[in-house]
Length: 115
Image (cartoon, rainbow, N blue to C red):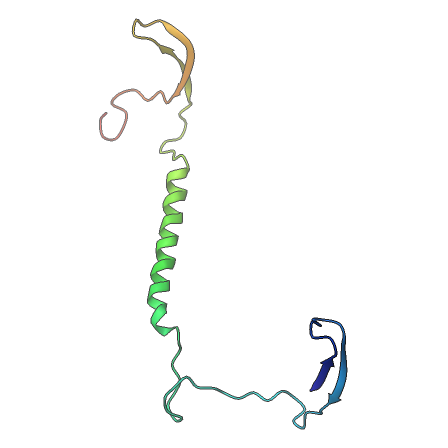
């Protein structure tokens, strides 16, 4: 262990000088088990054990939201080989307005539900 001292009360990383060096007789830092228990011979209990179910529920909710966002945010294709077609937008009288809209040309009756 090394003891340091500074003559400046506001010293942070510089301005310290070594006062004393104490050798560690064990050769390595001592590690002591501290049990979180009322009794010395009982096993310890985690401080956060009551929070585990709440955190698990939060993680599931966040995962569900991410999956729903990914599912709803991406277009889904349910058929292959169908080309998209641009059709003109018509007004109430059937006259083209100069705009176009992209549609899937699936004739009525070719879907599974008959629509």
